[in-house]
Length: 382
Image 1 (tube, rainbow, N blue to C red):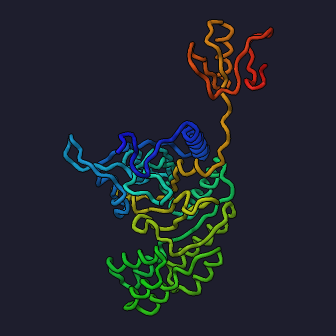
Image 2 (cartoon, rainbow, N blue to C red; image 1 turned 90 degrees about the vertical axis):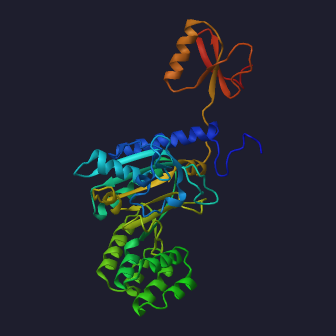
Image 3 (cartoon, helix red, strand yellow; image 1 turned 120 degrees about the horizontal axis):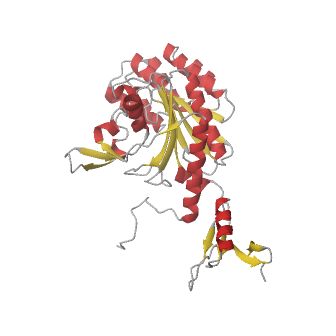
């Protein structure tokens, strides 16, 4: 094996892509800041129980684990930054009112989320803590729309779900943890045959509701169908009411998927996935996770979203970066002043090193004329 080969689903970002990713990072963080979200930067490594606490161990299989040589305790390389931000809100900031936080950093996965995904996403996201109402879910979804628009993403579709529907059905039928887990997997896979077999011993009302959930997918009309087809439980009525209110916000094209139970043990209410043309899997994921703060010793309502900048960068049109300016290696004070002025104005200026092939990517060059040093197009210069 060649020593320079990277592991599967791990790759370098070359200059053009790296520049695009950095531009997206700055754009997103500026957008978050404009909406009042404060930046935090958690560490890459933490003790394992801290990284997995409150997630229902959904992240366990995706987390790289190692032994800390100082303490002998198990540590993990973060696979998701959201639990870390919840820890910061609960223990370090310890505020009573609403807190808005954002972040951007690398995470590492033992396996990629999809066949076209990296195992080292550059995760960016935003979270609201301290508000349990649907208004904060609405704010976080509007922020996602603004962030994608600022990055140059055109029309996006938002698929909404609510884990409260499935939880209400399981609770009312007194379904045990083992069967609940099997039903969850069958619903996520939309495996109707498995659902039918698993529901065989359940009450008729519950059996019919669970069997029908994979079909409750489509536009906002699904909400009315769900009201007719699902049991009239207060918890289900409240969940459908939340989805109806969110679906009325017309910034996104909205779809409903009541069988979307992604992160079921992690989320506690509304969940959503954003899709853009050209990619089959979601470009952003989010939802409500009120239980995570409780696991850190301080119950805090929470909702947020995250996305991968590497994925986003590859979806956007590859605009040509502005060409750099080549300057000669010259001790002229006027040249140095002009180079400083151009760099201060945001231009890229490269001084060609003597006796070397330099400035290959430059489209312009500084030439001394009667009026002083001026940038000219290299291709047009005679």
